[in-house]
Length: 627
Ligand code: F6R
Image (spheres, protein in one colour):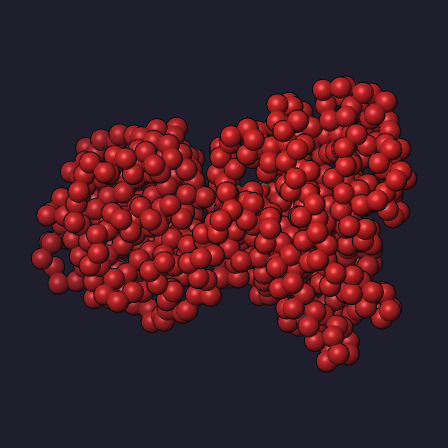
């Protein structure tokens, strides 16, 4: 959601904060601001809109300050206006705070503080925090030997309810940067005589790879001499940083116009990395040729699976359901995390609960899992469930919440629209479904080997799809850039790809698009069709090929222009569809790994042609850490 960055050390803080915010802009981008401390004053500069607005403002102000905090915002409470931008300050302008998350009890706190004379200038929940800290600081003498700032912030966070991460500086304590984590991510970076904090590692990887992610309920004091960590009760904790496996070039565009395009092109590599990690020891493991590092008892007597996820991860989960049910024969339900949280399924025994989230920080998914854990702990032992997470960020909050993780191997994804992380999630589901099938002996060895060998061909097939599609999808984008509505249809394992194709288009091009199971069109949505509404149909040979072709014909009869995602050299399809986005001919079961690629490219090129900000589409943020 919002992005936080902080610096204390020997370099000019403003430059480091701006560089860090640039790397975090994917988390939110409706306003930005920084606050530095210099010569006993806090200098706070904020601007509405993208980061370049803040940058232009800062060009007129030169400060050699060596401590500061920065923020890029995704509005929750209050409009995206400069007066709501972070950092927020107390009335005396001594304490500056940036926050990511939501303070649920801010109204009560605001009233209490108003009664004590505090005047509020924004509509945000965050503004109560600097006021509260300033109020608590009144109880300390600045010359006190321990850190009054740390103590005041510690007391303040004990009054706050909600999920939040904070970074705080104060004019009266120019050598202290205090950071807090409570259910919103925050990582500390360790340099030589300088220290950093950020919501996410890309912001600091250019300066250091030694990092320490804070855990919930932790508060850290960063000074030029080092880092001290405490819990909310004030006990000092001993923690060591670890080395990050991320190099600064991974967060560059590397010659591509946008991160999204770069990330689409990285998908063959993502599949290769997944094959290597999940399927490498085929000969060694007699029970199953898949190596997910999961314990045997996760699979024993398994009767049901529930998956919770949001957005693109939910689409990946639908494909996971198809694979698990068809290959391993285990009944699987996929839930929107935001719905499951308030209307969970009845409790069942021998159940596996899977949370899928690329960021590992999606508030809805985490809350659904936490709720499920809690309600099962309250019931009899027979309802105890097993929990598993699928994430691209094993160090995330999800990693702390569930005992077992399948790490997806996409590398960091910067474009807000998920592409390569989706493919990585699919690979995790292929591995999981095949592993379950091997354990439950629902497929024979020959079939298993055939599927795994098929998967091994996929990177090359994606490469040739990317090569042939680049020009085709660009041409189509030219024709459809002004189209107002799109329908995507698919069936079986490719129905979720229709949903994903529509979501990609909506997100980055702002064109209305819907995905439907092709057979459902005639039950209502077909009324939408006419010559102005193109239909993209995913039609690959297999169990539902003829059915999808007939459904496409029905759309054509209503004058819709038909775009087919079909195998290369499919003569029948060439006659029916007006335009083709051909993919390699692979087993239907593996086809989603290919059919999604032209749809990602189509969405990308349409958005680029419309001159839109592909990597940072309006109103969206990369990880949605609020409910
Ligand atoms: C779509 C997209 C979102 C996310 C959703 C869940 O391109 O990025 O729909 O998929 O917000 O995010 P994660 O996977 O981080 O839980």
